[in-house]
Length: 165
Image 1 (tube, rainbow, N blue to C red):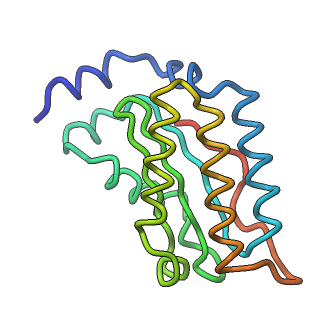
Image 2: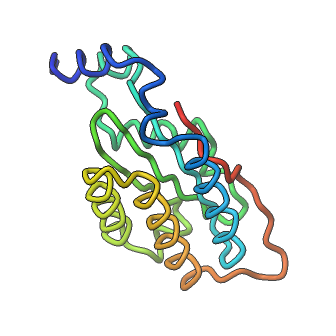
């Protein structure tokens, strides 16, 4: 067990995540998701998480595995065209993961999503939380628009507003 990681997560208060993403930032991210979803059939879900629960730390869950857990529990996979995308930001570990449902993963290689993750992490290292998140949403939206353009019937199946855990 990595004690340094565990202590880092356990000693940070829950409100710490609000330092990175204030209410106005979250609103801007939600608005950007809503706007970009008009150009494609994909569904974006943005989740920022601060300190992890003890049970997650105890099992030494990686940020990628945690993203998979949230992808499932938030039902990002439950879209009509298997077109859900999860952008997961683990603030304490300073890691970003993007998971694409099978309908999207069949057309867009994971390397494309990983490049967006690394760009977000670089922005975050510079303290540009909002800018990094908005750029990621725009880049993800552009990828989705090129592979899954919007049609006449384009329902909004997942909440646009970011979730902060």
